Length: 167
Image (cartoon, rainbow, N blue to C red):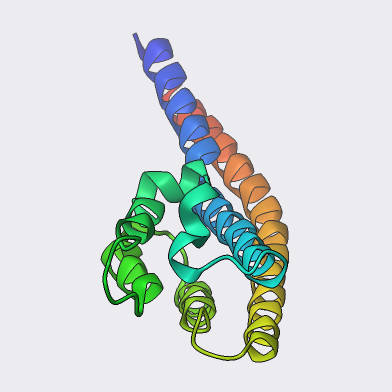
């Protein structure tokens, strides 16, 4: 019986170590999804001169769909006065994201430039936000790689020690 208990404790600790980095991985996916959206919006405005209301119609991303952000953006498409739709949509969905405050600030800053300035200023703002998000993604990706290894090693070690103590 104690062997079974030791195996169960070992497996639980190992499983915890594997899944401990799940929130960080989700945060990375969200940042990557927003980077893709940023580039899409920049291209739709810069190359196709798409009206602000129609920009999001052709974009799809599973991560942003699950949070409801894209649906919220699209819901403003038929508004008579189209102003601050990005800020409104992000405000309603903000608590559904795992991103930290700096990443959320970048998202807000990107949205605040859409349709409110001349083309050159808008493109400069987009490029700045895209570069900021890329830097965040690179830093987060390297941190996740390191942390996931640590979580797995700790889970295995704690599970092994607990199993040895029980036996």
